[in-house]
Amino acid sequence: MRAILRGLLVVVLGLVAGSAVNMGLILLGGQLVPPPAGADTSTTEGLQAAMPLFEARHFLFPFLAHALGTFAGALLATWVAGRISKAPALLVGLLFLAGGIASCFMLPAPRWFEVLDVVLAYLPFAWLGYVLVRRPKP
Image 1 (tube, rainbow, N blue to C red):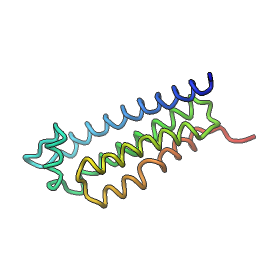
Image 2: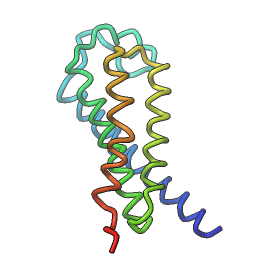
Image 3: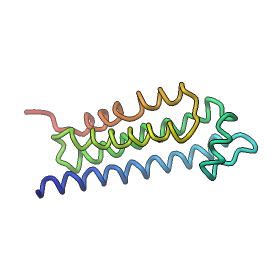
């Protein structure tokens, strides 16, 4: 029971840390690559309405936020869990992937971005976070 609770807490910690990295990059991206003139990105409805105005460059920071947020969460979860099991990192990756898939249904982003995001941003970066921290087998 203790191991299950510890594993759950490690995953929650990874989700919180990854979400913080994600939000930080989204906020930074809005400063470095401002939205198109007249776009209201403060609400979901405004973002949905403005999505056709976005160019490819506007999707760079969302991709980085998803990939690096997942990476940070998986890396931290692996490190705190003891650097042996890949389960915490992959669970963090799967949960962020579920959020990414849900986002595809909520926001009308271009299909090329949705595919790129879902395929490359979540599980590969969760795996990378695990690989960079794992303890090599003796």
